[in-house]
Length: 270
Length: 257
Image (cartoon, rainbow over all chains, first blue to last red; front, side, top):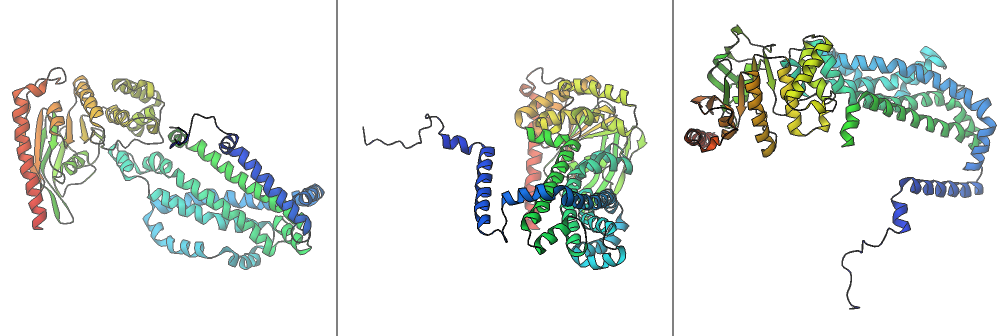
């Protein structure tokens, strides 16, 4: 009897503490956060000039938040918001027009591809020359960064609407306008949100790039100053804050998408 | 009700339909059956006005009808429901396109949903329904505009065998209740025999009508064992022989090409 071995793991025994821990993702994340933060803290304290560390960053945050960081953030976000709110509707409309009007599609695509594939940083000197280095530069770089992914995705969405659904519209004698409103637009919503998400990420990158290269105020400037004066603790404050904001914007877009496309949520519920 | 006269259709030089002629009387249920590639779906799409024939003409209810019109409605093989519309709003679609006032079209859609037995699913999205339920919505959507002619393109082809048989019975009931005129495309001899007043057998290379069988078995055929009737067995045998020959023909054609 003692030589008998279980070939199958004994599942009748209750879950161990370890398996229960693994089944709780939030607990795992909390522990990993604690581990990463304390390692950073320990390493940072041995090399405070070039590495900084969490407790120093927190104290820098309380020191600089009101006087420096928030005004800089306001400047950056204002330019970003105006730029993105110009780019989003324009990009969506232009993308739809490209997908629906053959002449426009054929004539405009080469230009779009040319501008889209040019790295935006190369445009900054020209934009500075035209627009200066403040609000208008931010708006322009944000709009330029985000509008092309929005156009291109919207265009793809309009082109890739299910042909069989278009047949339904035709069979029920839908006009071209009705086809656009009842089939093409709802059908391309997923593409629109993909475009907005990519556009958003590129716009956030764009505004910081512009500030790093040209600005005298804003979040980008604060980051450069921190590095230049070796105040890494102060540099990390706007950096982390901006990261959190970027994540929040993406989350807001995700929320809007679920709101606009309840059938998608219905599909994943099953 | 439907007249298709001397229809030819070729795709890039390839003759798909050769002198296809068909007449469907009001209240009649006619099935098109044939092997893959015989052009039966092409014929149906031409009847629907979704496809233009290379020559020939289509008349519906006494009027030339070369494009889609309010007189005809189509049920698709893959349902083609709008995933972003609820069951009710899918049924409403045709009426919405026609500009029927909202209260009226919603009332009509509810009526049709209860006809197909899905009243309780009005607020569900297609993704929350089974294939059989989705096709019932497809049928309700097609009937909502009160078409003179209902076109069905292998409507039960994508469903499992049990659901298919159930929906065949449902369709027969609805056809009787609404006195529908139907042109029905199918792969299945049994399905055609169960539903049709007349079966048109089509051949391949090129697609054309090769035979026609009126079916006089009394309806509804779900009420008795219609498969035990001699007419069932005899007609089934004849159609099967014809299709068998066409399949061999199609095969040798492919080999000699």
